[in-house]
Length: 131
Image (cartoon, rainbow, N blue to C red; front, side, top):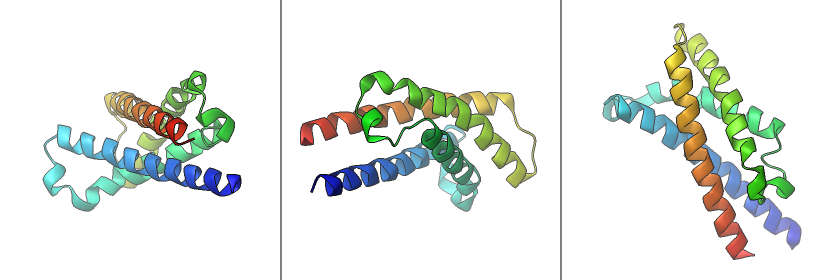
């Protein structure tokens, strides 16, 4: 019983991270006024950011049940964003065969960290209330 609750809450966390990264991607395209016609072009930002986030988050223990419910561990979200943004920009640059803009890395990292922190706090609140 406890294991199934943990599995479900982990699944919610993974899906929430994916949705949050999709929101970050949409925010980026919306800020440039290209959201309505971006279509599959959004994948060139979404997929690299998703891969980078999951690598950094996994490495930093952001899916560890002991850490995900501890508010003092939220610094890990920021650190994962700091690692994920440059890697995502590099992967995106390779996909598009385009140079990597420093300002893009900074904005991608900042917005990602902010939105993922908000999501993780919401997750903590709802999960603590559910228990």
